[in-house]
Amino acid sequence: MYRKILITTDGSAVSKHTACAGVDFAKQMGADVLALYVAPEYQYPVYVEIIPPSYPSEEEYLAQMRRVGQEHLDSVLRAAQDAGLRCEGMTAFADAAALKIVEVAEQRQCDLIFMGSHGRSGWGQLLLGSVTNKVLSHTSKPVLVHRLIKEPGT
Image 1: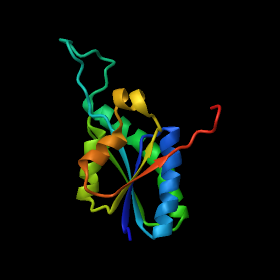
Image 2: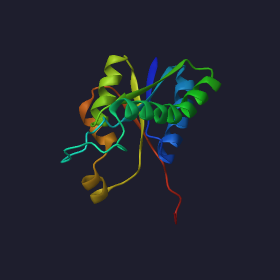
Image 3: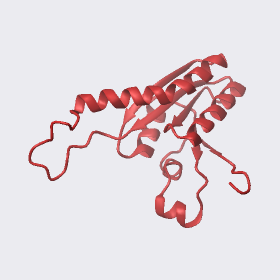
């Protein structure tokens, strides 16, 4: 049914749990995995006439974020490889993570986007927004949302 599944991660505990579930799902489907980490774009200091010497250059920032992205992607890639799946990891840069996820899914011809939800509801979801909700509203591709179920009293 699905040949290539995009699994997103942001490095959080919820997204690591979701990525493992995504790999399990991909294994059931016999699908390839594209793991994606979206890092914020480089920002120049605002209202500063001279950039402080301690402020990273754009090249330093991009290199650091690629290292961070690779760290977050490694566990997903390892799990996919251990499951015998073909997999690839990718770090992308964008200030609008949801739109970048949709764009990558289109460009890389993914059949499904597998992502997590922090489980916020009501005002929390409305005020904070949700990358997952934004992806759902901007793509025509199927999106499988994995919710981390909290134990009572936690």
